[in-house]
Length: 165
Image (cartoon, rainbow, N blue to C red; front, side):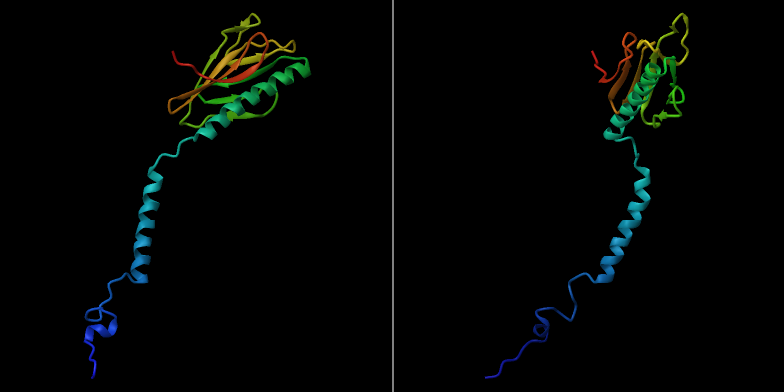
């Protein structure tokens, strides 16, 4: 009894010598095409400020204001922190420190018109007695707003979410 195998059976059930699978070259080509499309498409997606970066910005602004308050208390002389809402920047009056808000973060300031009987301009002044001119900086991003508040009586600085009514 002799057993004959059909031609297609010699290759494990494949027909006509043709393989039904992807080759390594085909797979590499597909991966390369997907990588090129991703490289072209990714810059089109907006890269905004993340939530942790937003909170870090508010913390940096509060830290700059607290440092100026401390400098006024220790130095015995008033220290004025410059607030440039149009330039989106806070500049320390006691050091070269600057805090700059990125373009996708809204930046506004509510400041006193006069301080100590003089026009306050775009500053929050801290006095050696602990008093300040006070003010509120508002930082907003994607529907979320944080306020950096400076109390005029105590000069204390706090960060609080803005409450909508």
